[in-house]
Length: 468
Image (cartoon, rainbow, N blue to C red; front, side, top):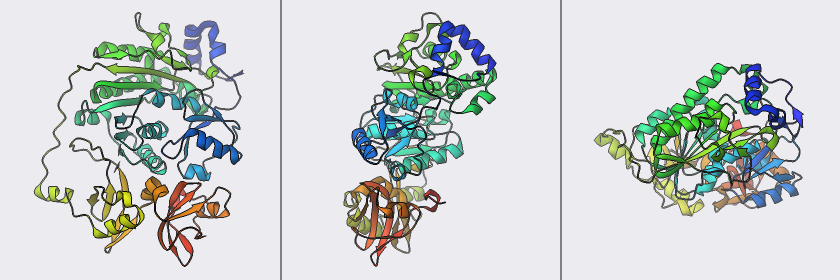
């Protein structure tokens, strides 16, 4: 067992009082290296298939105890952010215990799901995989820069049914009350579980930060409750050990919301029960779940709450009437060039409804949000744009449906053209014919290109390339 060299004094004083002799056991890590892992994007393939591909490529993975789709990296020195499978969205690099909360939400295809604190997108990608392209996924991040990272990651993972917002959760609660079957709140927290992985968290730690995060989490939880449909499920999680943000937070929530009950997580197979001395008397702390450093993760707390089936919800805020011109713009004529392109390269999309905004064409989620006045960063998939009556496809289109494009350049991991493609170079066309094509590595999409004269012109975005 490896101890952390220095804990913040206020943290250690509190935890020694709460844990007693267990402090030196629970707050020690089995390894000197931060736990590292990845979660398979099940929109791309099954976890066992990716594990087999990774093993064949010399990247051994060990099953994670925290989620069926997650693995730990046997070699903690591996840096896979530039790996072709990562570019293709086949997996998301994620600290192993961070995969647990989304797995507890019990999401199924067709559900309407909201992830209220979604950036950078690991848990959101898990929820998207569980939805399997059906239903609706609202992914929200309050911080604008992090919201853009979230948008980019969902594009890389090929998520087709997400609406991404950069909004206050209170505004979402007013716009969509009682609309969602499942809500995830991985709350902004004081980060006590990240002291080893992110040493700056220990430097910035203060009791005042705990109080601030507890108040923020309280507000987000109340808004999450407003978003949840009767009979729906809410999972609340943090990466901290603070009672004010964990057991005590959930106990106070149940006092404010008597139409919710606490699910028993004792049978989930990982971690340990919550602790009664961190919450008011009578609270079922044993129904919550904790992951301590000794359990192989960096530290997590989780609780699952269920809303009564007979609960009432208020009506949504009025979106406001649209002008006649706005109504016409919402039902534009589908450009012929899009129909011709889709019919040739993506036949399954040819008859699908599209949204046209200016010269851009979008494929919205098949399950819509109710009418609202909010402005999402992204809704569905940007298919491309019109340029003088020509349709030019977007990178996101190929990342979402490239594996089913009728014209594909098929690469393998050990093909030197794969590395060349990710550097932004033209490559020789071996399987694709003239015209637009998807470029794939072992069946996973790496964007699109255009074949001419036996060469694939590279359209991989410059900001994503493996340069240097």
